[in-house]
Image (cartoon, rainbow, N blue to C red; front, side, top):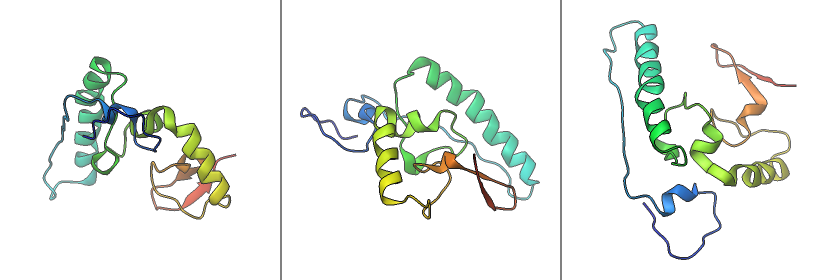
Length: 122
């Protein structure tokens, strides 16, 4: 956590500036089972534990490097009120959307198919 008594203008979710707790929840699965079993486990933690945390602390943030890639409302969870500003920076410096990753700034401009291919959203 990066508690700061001075306002800091960065992409970091402001919740990290005054957080009292850093809570991590996770799930494990047997890699010998089908992928659908892992997906079911991840959906369970997203929709149960994650849901409870979001209800308890709706203005909290998520540390991007330890985030659930199925995080609902990920723009708010990762960047909070900073998202519109950093999205406009992304559009300015990468107008062709050459740089892409799941749940990165601007990724909502594309849909990723199961085979990994990307299609623009119109």
